[in-house]
Amino acid sequence: MKQSTRRDFFKLAGTGVLSASFLSSISPDDLSAMPEKKSGQPLLNLGMASYTFRKFSMEKTIEMTKRLGLKHIAFKSMHLPLESTADEVRAVAAKVKEAGLDLYGCGVVYMKDEASVQQAFDYAKAAGMKVIIGVPNHELLELVELKVKEFDIQVAIHNHGPGDKLYPTPESIYEKIKKLDSRIGLCVDIGHTQRVAIDPSAAVKKYQDRLLDIHVKDVSASTPEGKTVEIGRGVIDIPKFLKTLIKLKYTGKVSLEYEKDEADPLPGAAESIGYLRGVLALL
Image (cartoon, rainbow, N blue to C red):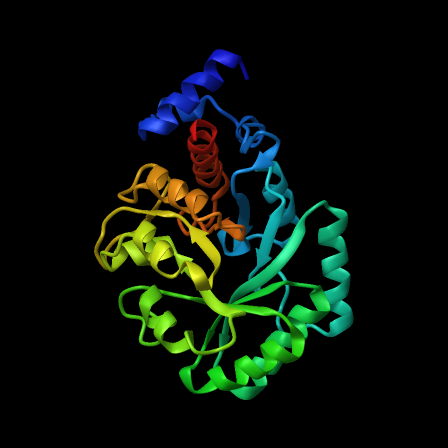
């Protein structure tokens, strides 16, 4: 990729103007080579929520994540079933590590009864995961707190936006967990947050003390009808959001959850990661 093209990309990324014709000339490998570092340190820890590649095998998911130049991944259960034995989980985790990826977490994991809570923690422990991105029923939160203390594994509760009866907004999570162990916190999904007309930047700032994980995406509208689009093509102010995280000195993962184009997600995922890197390069 020519240097002038890289500069053009960063300029366009910073202004939010990325044309389809420009992006069609860039391969995912070009995008993965773009910098996300400044002064030798990563500005943010970009990662992948494997739900992005839900129609693909675990091996293909690892391959595509590596093509994007990402080093961190959280597995959804289709890539490592929750019902797997401890030996099976350890074997898959070893494959991920051998591929050069950090299997930092899992999710979204739904916890609807005591057995599913225990299963989630046993699974995460066997894999060596640091965080469970989960949705525990309200009546199970005390049990979740006990397990967090027992296993020393974080639980980042995920908001799902309009229509979600348990945790539609970051605030709905915070109000339930603010008196619990600090290892129980939030996975703020910025798309679902925007869909309830809440500014994601304001949300992460307000709940920064319990911010454990982030699902990053863009959406077409600040309404329940908003759909996932390539980052930079939607209504979320991504430069403002990234600047907010940096100002907050956020050290967790910022994982792409690209829900569009499930049969062919790599081009949109590459555009999205490229946009994030382009903005970060200008900060």
